[in-house]
Image 1 (cartoon, rainbow, N blue to C red):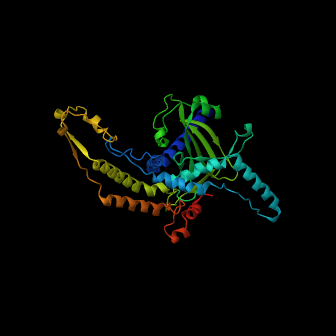
Image 2 (cartoon, rainbow, N blue to C red; image 1 turned 120 degrees about the vertical axis):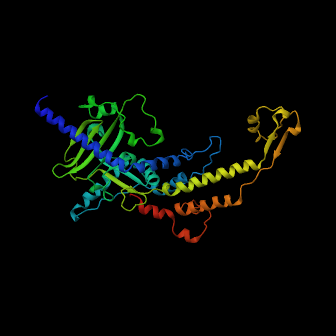
Amino acid sequence: MDEKQAKSSKREEQIVSEVWDNYRYAMQAKKPLHDKWRKYEQFYKNDQWSGIKVDKDRIKPTINYVFTTVESLMPYLTTNVPDPIVLPTRPDTEETAKDLTKIVKIILEKNGIEKSLQLGERERLKFGTSIWKVFFDPHKLNGLGDVAFEIVDPVNFFVDPNEVDDLQNADFCGTAMKRSIEYIKRRYPEKANQVVADQMNTEISVYDSEDDEDPRQRQATLIEYWKKDKNDGLVRIVVAGNVLLSYDKNFYMHGKYPFVRGLNYPIQKSFWGMGEAEQLIEMQVIVNKLLQLVIENVALANGQLVVDKNASGIRNIKDLANKLWQPGLTIPVDDINSIKKLDGVLAPGWVVNLIQMIQKNIELVTGVSPLYLGEAPGSEKFADRPHWERKFKSCCW
């Protein structure tokens, strides 16, 4: 290797090291959010008892308020797609503005704005933040390229932790994805032979569906890293594992990161917003446990049996217990006095009242009340200020 190649190789190592250092710095700062988002997704999918120590044979009831809240708000946010209007900057550019308005509408339609809106708004409601990537895709239209946009899971997006307000002021940002070796070879054939499978993606393996590692070991961590440089303008760096695949200077003339952030509820001095799930989780856990108590007490109120195994001739008591719910059940025994039924105890009235109180609190927090769902209104005052008006104000559109 000559001196020029050695310098080039050394420079590539420095670039890759910079990307990984900043990536890990950003991911470490948002790790607590990943733990929250994993839990929010579990609750949304009604997997609400995992991680809670409870006997596996006990009933685990749920009333999924996280799912109900998100899906009740979705129609108001996604029924109508964005209708963009490009305004002229000067009187002589009115015709150009009209043409651009038509073009933007076509671009939205061709890129499947309806599907993207569904994905983005669900992320915003569940996690508090949605990330839209708006970029030029050179692979579209058989290699001619075209404008494109996609929804980036907030887990896969990282940003300079020191920037809490304007994304464009961040020193760096980017995305990290698990991609197959075949995908990387197709996109970056020049250096694809240097890329090897890795397990460097633990930071983005958050959801339950990602817990299992790829059995074929054919995936690598692909990082698209963006930064703004005084001399080189907007810089785009692509790294797979420890291999530098691309380094592009002055990538866009406008010099802006190709990402747009949408917040559900802004949080003071935080880049990331707050979703609906965050306000519901604790109340949902309490309701689940209270429902468990009520249901189990109802079962006890049905009565229990005390069985003398020797006198009754019944050996499999557990099998008998599983049949107690059957109507018209007949239990053959050697001695009728060998079985005695005990009277159960009803759940205290305050437990039911507490459940109803928490349900009311959930309605107040989310705004998803019987009135909102089209049922009989509880008060005229609430009807004057529907919850979806507040939601539209925070919508990224």
